[in-house]
Image (cartoon, rainbow, N blue to C red; front, top):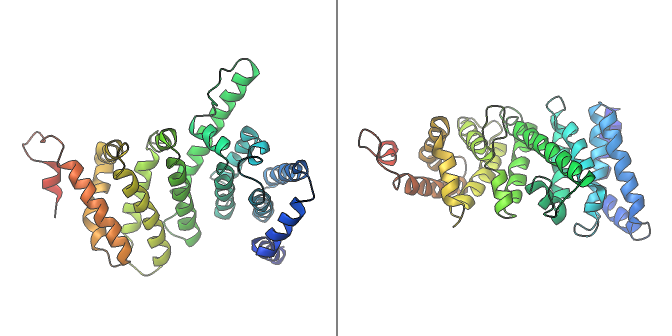
Length: 309
């Protein structure tokens, strides 16, 4: 079974497989591919074996990649797909299943309609009544569940290569969501974890956690995830509209402020990679510029001055 899975995965990753599917896509109606996608999604949910789920997800990824993101992907059905992705992203699933699920979600959110629905909590902006209102409520509930699932994925990336890669993919996905506008950015601010932390706070925790590992083990993977986190944080911290709320979140609680200051102080001096140190230095400058604008503390000192090294 394992060898069959490897052979199938190799085939699905090949360019020839996607090109072949695109060719068939020219002659077969979208309804055929939609039905196949739905069937694979049902199989992925029905069977708990990791190999079956990853193969089903690989086929779905291949199908979605060959569809038009504007005209066709919304036809897969937002609420039904999100409901099943929630099941595939839950903690009890293996890291490979979660990784494929995040990749599939990313592709689906390349559809502007689906991205808007996720960012708006399932509301399309029109007045809804009856069954439409119920559908909107269902969408809002499953969106919240998927966001919680993604927050759990951010805690997987400490000790193994696949876990770190999953964490990196989630950060890239969150960066994409945030880039869509105000509603997308606000997704990063709402509490999503069991302890009430936002995605921004959890990304800072990822940075602080990965920074602690100074051995060469998984060094490349750790550098990649920290790079994505710093790129996102720098983009938000330098944005005309998002800079202040971003840095307020990162310094609001004592725990997150400690992580933020620690990263700002230590990461610019890292020997992991030159571009990582450069990104960290930019982040440090923005953090301290923000902190120095804050009022003095009760003992007459400034938080930024007391933490600079």
